[in-house]
Length: 253
Length: 365
Image (cartoon, rainbow over all chains, first blue to last red; front, side, top):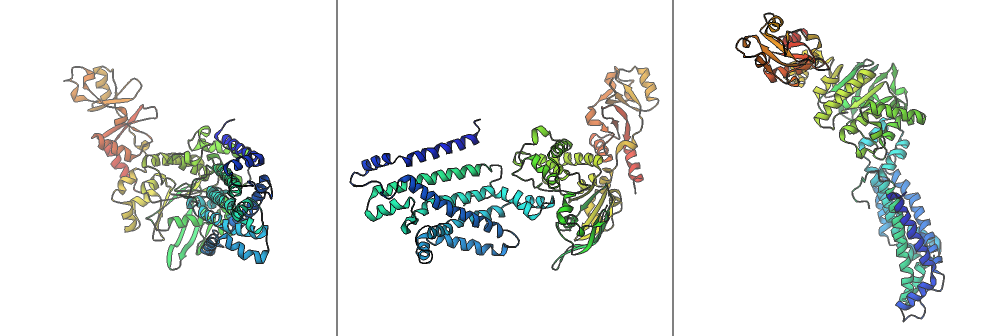
């Protein structure tokens, strides 16, 4: 079967396999980085192989993004319900604040409280990624057409049934668009975790900056960029799974 | 039966619905009509508890609806609205299946019901069941909306301007179709509209509202003939007499008339006319194709030259048409009588301007 849908997912699987193969080929990186930056004595970061760094990075992003979704989506839903409606402006501005507050500053504040390593990084990433998810969840749910809602209630759906069967599916594309933005930002921002020893693709970059080694920086930055593209494509595919839900908000996040 | 007892709805100081009492008999179509803001939609929405009355009570089948859980009540009442409100992420079949699904019907029964309903509203189940709402025309969407409202076979149907969002031609087709569906199903229907012609076409009873109050509740005939006050009089308009004609079917006023076959001889014509001046000319299949004036006969070179030919569709009306259509046909053709035909286009008799005058006088309720 060669439906567009099948092709989309097959292409993504192919890209992912290619990416894994590429980051596993340490020799290839050594040779090409040495060729590009002949002035550097050492071209790959000695702490860990790329595969390990990518894996650390994915874990960092997965944990913080999962937290963002687990908190962000219910939060967005809650403030569009009658019970939480008054808090909508407050939640919207607090999450905006979360994004305007630099993650580096969050780290600086979090380290004294939470120590070094994974935990403060996850907290910083979680706060930073919250805005697009919450904002798009609110916008998507608010944009569900009134007559659709009235029909849902008029046919005898309870509030919960209407939310689950009508509102969330209709708002799905907007919500997923927000998740997409959040995750991609997260992949980029997760670099800062290396500053406080959370590992990931930030490690060679920080080391490169400290030791003035461009090869290290490229070693960290190139896979991170590819990872971001892959994640973006993955979520674009998920978004397309809801193609029949209307594009209810003009420009998702 | 639905009963509203002194129902009022207030928002702060504004009164949306003011002490409305109304009784709708089972199997009848009651149209709530009035200018915008008169409270007709609010009244409708209180019947399925999308809104709660401030005072008064509503009984459905003798039971106070405030004692039934709103969700449960709504599942037993069909609901169709102006912009249809089809769920955009569900197929037509899934949209129609919602209420049966909420009522836990089994899958096979739901599938059968969907097919049945699509056929009922005149949509091909095979072509439309798997479509998404965005792939439907306005008229098709409205029909799916009606099918969805009828899905669980509710005894009561609430409709809020169900034919509002389509072009006038489609609207008329949908109204005609709805009338024939209603004839078969005999639901208790409450329909909100601001379109008087729609009300007259569909209603068994019209409830006319003005700023929250029920002004008159009567059959369309009575309302048109004897408006309760100046407001109703103005609302039904200067052409209320014409509108009354559109409530009366031609059927009862058809009278026999002289007919002549196209190939008849002079003698046959003379005996067929029997002293009348005019006769309708019919073809072999019995369709009226024109008329003949006895005074033209002597001077005409042949019979066929004496026939004034006319297009059947232009001059004739169906027996199921209304007096209003007959009158319009007469005025349009400048004729004082026109032939009436059956479903196959065969001549049944004629109806005259005088008959319409008589009918108007007789129909005075």
